[in-house]
Amino acid sequence: MNRKELIQGSVANIFAQNVNNKLGLVDGKGKPKKVADRILYVVAEVTAGTTIVNAFDTIERKAVGITNFDKNMLAQGRNAVITEVKLEYGTLLTANYGGTFENTAPFVNFNEAAPAYILNTKLKFTDDEKPLLEFPIKEIHNPNTTRTNDEGYRVLGDLRMIESERELVLALESPKVVSDLDPLKRHFIMLTLRVGESVKR
Image (cartoon, rainbow, N blue to C red; front, side, top):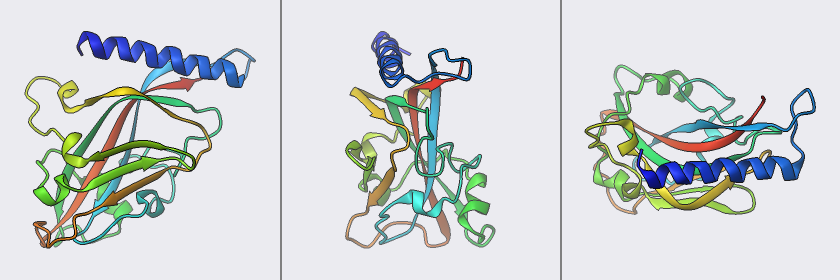
C-alpha cells in the first residue's frame, strides 16, 4: 500500500469516527464506537443482454460467499467510508453448476480476466438518496496483479459514505449488442470495497 493509500485510509477512519460521534453511535457500554478497516463485498450473476436493475434483489440474506452487507443495506449502527474498490470476474460450467444463485456463487474462483462485454458494462452503486460509485467495469477490474492483492484495487479520488439503514442498489447496464459471453458458462462478478467501518470496541 503506497503513501497516498495510507493517508486516505487514515482520513477515512477519522471521517467515519466523526460520523459516529455526530450520530451519537455507542456500544453496549455507552462508549463511542471505534472505526476499523473492513472489507464489504457483494456477488452478482451476469447474463447476456440483461440489464440488472438491482443485484441485491436476488439476495435473500447476508451469507458467506454472497455478501456481508445486511441483505441490501448496512444495519443500524454500521456506517462505512469507501476508500478503494475492485471488481473481480469468474465463471462456472453450467453443466456442472446449474443450481440456484445462492447455491452456486460460493464456488466461483474470481481469478479470470473479464471479456469485453463485461468490461464495457456500466456499474452503478447507490443508496436511496445519492450515487456512491459509477464506473465502466474496466475502470475497476485489474486481473493482472503481480505482487500483492493491493494492486487489484482502484483508489477513489474522494471518500464515499455508506450510511446505515439506507437501501443500496447495485445496478449493471450492459451494452446493447450481441455479447461475447461463453454460452456454456455462468458468469459472475464480485464488487469489493475497502472501508473504514464503525464497530464495537
